[in-house]
Amino acid sequence: MEAGPVVVASTAKDVESHQEAEVVALADAVAYLRRPKDFVAAVIDLRRAMGYRRLLYVAGIATPSNLAILVYASVDLVDSTRVAFESTLGRFHTADGSWAKEEVDPTACGCAACAAKGAGGDLEGHNRRALFEESRRVAMAVRAGRIREVAERRAVNDPWSTAVVRELDLRHHEWQEYHAPVAGGPIFAYTAQSLFRPEVLRFRRRLVERYAKPPGARVLLLLPCSARKPYAESKTHRRFREAVWRSGNAHAVHEVIVTSPFGLVPRELERTYPVAHYDVPVTGDWSRDEIAVLQGDLRAFLDRNRYDAAIAHVVTEAPFVTEVVPGAILTAKERTTEEDSLAALTAGLVEALRDVPKVSSHARTLEDLRNQVVFQFGPEGAALLDGASFRGRYPNVRIFRDGRQLGMFTDLGKLSLTLEGGAILSERNVHWVEIEDFAPEGSVFAVGVTDADERIRVGDEVVVRHGGEVRAVGVAAMNPREMVDLRRGEAVGVRHRAAKKVL
Image (cartoon, rainbow, N blue to C red; front, side, top):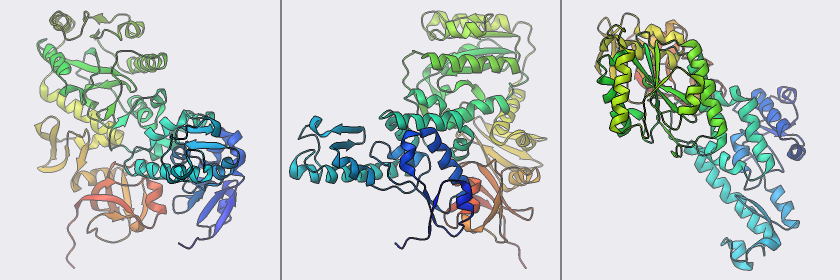
């Protein structure tokens, strides 16, 4: 492959003055091994300036143990100069860090270089091979949407890698969130750093910025999470729901699950990504950081959402929940699912609901669906339910207005749009992708995109339009800047297309 023009850049100005460059190389990259915070700032600064059509090259710092961190930080190109140099210093590199040659068991590695001379016998050959093998694992993780998990595991290998991931999470959340999908595969929250990954923080922030409790819900019921997701499909939560139904006014009860790393999950959002797609060790033990997150989110939630009464049907979580909600009624005994506990839950709800007017299933379903569309699209999404009716059994509910279907809620926890629903969003100028004047036949590719709503994230439902005319609806496969910058690749996976006009 013939290389294009390369510019060595320290700042965004260097990139802007060399628009012809196809590769941007971070200047004096090795010096950043002493300054991880500055490394993160420099990489983000360059990426903002260069966009996504050009490649970012960071020379002289890649090792098998930090390659995943570099790729997670949006580096495209690396080299093997560091491992080659450290081979002369007697360092034996693996994906889990490096060892002194003297510490290496001769049978520890079976690569071609080590097979010929024993582990550590051909250090440069081994180290180059280790970097190459890790590059294959990292590429596989990128394709599977699991680079974050690999980066978290590798981050504990050395202080520099740990500092880079922490800096990204704690000081550059908006940048990370812009690149994090709103749909996809499972999230494995196995480390303390998972509390701060962008998908988790996005959910928690949207709960503050976009969410209000259903108006008909008058009694708050706090419940523990379950290993199975969504929670309602677990045996534990089915028993909880039976106890709620026995109260006689179930739709006036608002079930909210307490969980780590998400803090709080209202029942109507339990199918939303990623809360229906995460896995954590379910031991009943909470770290100080997890407790702090939950208590902070619970305080903020109750400041915005008022209830007549609160019931906490929890055991392990009871001490730190009642610190925030001292008036909460505790109904669980030793186990939340034992018969005495469930009977106490029903009795507590009956008492709390004694003077609460009956809430109908229809009214509460509409409130829950409204919460889902606002959580998904922002406040503009509420227009999709104005004057609408619905058919079907939750969670598979179709939305209609004037006999036309606007979309369908699915067990994926989001509303899938029809062309009519897309037109409503387009009128409110939200989740739009502007294309050149053509009628999409299949997917919309980046080469045909001229602009896109900055609120779109990968996995979002979007409306494809030209000059205000809706041409298609589908799912975003890129973030907005990628759609505009790139000249190849799928930008939108189209679900419905407008009929071609007959000239």
